[in-house]
Amino acid sequence: MKLKKSILFILALTIFTTLLIGCIKKQGGDKEGSTATSKEYNDNGYLVSIDWLEKNKDNNVVILDGRSKKDYDKGHIPGAINVPWQDLANIKGKAGDIGWGIALDKENLSRKLGELGIDENTIVVTYAKKENGWGEDGRLAWQLKNAGINTKMLNGGFDLWQAQGKEISKDVPTINSKILDINKIDESKTITTEELKKNLSEYKIIDSRTNKEYGGATKFGEAVGGHIKGAISFPFDQVYNKDGTVKSEEELIKIFENAGINKNDNIVIYCTAGIRSAYLTEILKMLGYPNVRNYDASYYEWATTNSDLIEK
Image: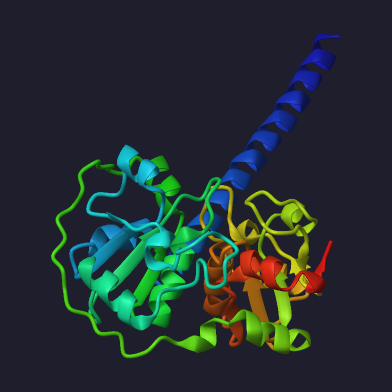
C-alpha cells in the first residue's frame, strides 16, 4: 500500500512539474513575441518606440499630444505640446456643414505649425490615448506628412508611457516659434466628397467606425445613420494589441487580407470626421499599400449631401 502511494505521489509530482515548465515556456514565448514587435517598430518612418523617443527627444524633435486639453492638463509626456486635431482643421460652422473638419490649407497650416516651433527640418512625434481614443495621433501624422513634415507616431501612445512608469509632467513648455512655408500639400492622400461620389465604384471603401455606427447608430449628431454605399466595416482599433501597441506587420497584413483589403486596391477610408480613418490610412501606408486616401470630410459631410448613397 505504501509503495502504491509513493508511486502515485511521484506520478502526480511529475505531471505537475511538466505543466509548470510548459507554462513558464509559454510565458517566455509571449515575452519574446512582444520584444520582436517592439524592435520592429523602433523607428520605421511611421512608428517609433518609447525607447527611441527617450534617446532622441533632444535632437530637434517636437512632441505633439493629440488628446483633449482636459486630458493634457492632467498630465502628459514632458515637453509635449497639446494640439487636438481641431486646431489644425476647419471647424467653422457646425459638424455636417460642407468643409467642416477638413485639414487646413497650406497657408494656415504653415502659420499654425510655425507657431508650434515646427519647420521643414523638425522631426515630429505624435501621440494620443489608445483606450477609448480616436487615433488623433494618426490624424496629426497624416496631415503633417502630407505637408512634407517628418512625422512619426509613438507606438502605444500615452497609455503605454504611463503603464511603464515614465515621467509625467503638468508643465506647459515654452515654444520657440519658427518660420515655415509649406511648398504644397500632397492631395493624393485625401479625397473630396465630389471626387468620391463621381468615382464611387472605383474604390474599395473602408468604414473605420464601430460596427454599431456602420449599422446605423448616430452617436455624434450625424444627419442620418448608416454607411457609404458599398463600404466594408473595419473598426480601426483592430490594429492594436491589448497594450495599445500596433500589431506586427505580419499580423496586420493577414487581418487586412481576411477583410478583403488588398495591396492592389484603390482604397478610401472614412469615419465620422476623418480621425480614425487617418490613423488607419497611416497604418496601411506603413504596410506598403500604395493607393490609400483618407476622406477627411468623412461621414459627417456624406450624410448631409448624399443621403441617397447610404446603406444600413
